[in-house]
Image (cartoon, rainbow, N blue to C red):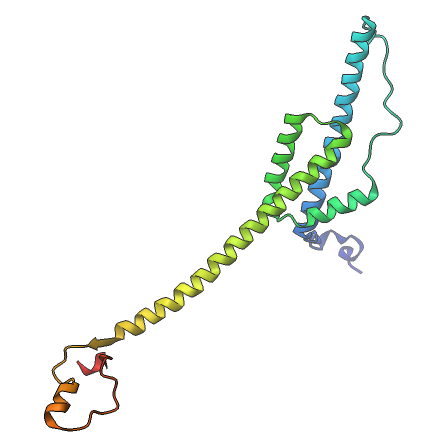
Length: 199
């Protein structure tokens, strides 16, 4: 028995399984939501401490250590599932812009803890609507391109045929009348079509 069978270091390292991009987007966005909720809790505690200092007029902050709250705010499981479902509709290329927009709104409004999830939902809805609009625009562009291609093929067909309304060998009604013959069943108002080969 060889040593290689005892020690498996000769084997190639197993490749890390490729994760679904949608799962990565959902995980990233939900982690951001959780972090922003914790930050909002921290800011709310700091605001409460500042208010307490102003109210009492004495700062014992250096002496008293405030314990961390036993129960921090968390969104309900139903709301979490709804938000995760909304996150699945976000294309991976929009993950970064969604995060930036969410952070921008958090910095702008400094929401209470309970309002963070609502703000997050509005950002997701905004991104979903934008994605739908872009998909509609792409769909219309594809339809226009296919119509444009067919019209181009008609143009090339038209360029191969030539219309000769003043050709010398076109029969007219007046020639038939002068000769005393009955006119043929041809519609005389139509010009004569000839292919490019005839020239």
